Length: 227
Image (cartoon, rainbow, N blue to C red; front, side, top):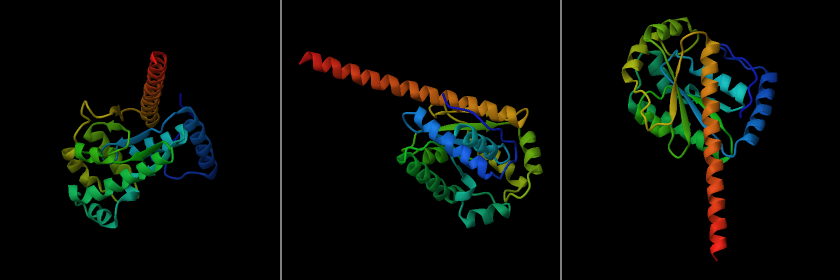
């Protein structure tokens, strides 16, 4: 089971040196408990709390975190700052860079968490290409998220673009690995629901890996006995 530690509140953006050191320790502990890396994409429309949840998963579960917005080229940031929605062509290179980042961390045996809107199925397919991604979709009413987005300061994404994001949003399909998490209630409740979902996913992955190893061992033993 993954360990849990620190609280992160909605809107937090800075990380102290002590917190970074604690996260590195937790990351080491987490990797020792998992036989293979897990990769979490916290998805949803702007203002749903993606960064808040991703930071909490980083700090409490020791995952290596990347902020999806940091991968946007300047041209994308300029368009969104002007209230112009991104096209699929704008998003594809951005999504491919995030995918390559996860691939690199996976090769190092690191578990990761990334915040990314991942609004469409086609976007999510790019993100999880050759990477075992689990999506945590933060869901809530447009009215609630509009209010939260309006209260957010210092971000290039204007609240006026939220309707276009809801229009583009395609919920997770049954064959996509992931779960919906409500943003209703307090930020701590949203965080805890997300953490519980990720821990359950990690335990399932570990159980399946253990079963596969046991099955392979049984097959090897049976083959040896038949010789």
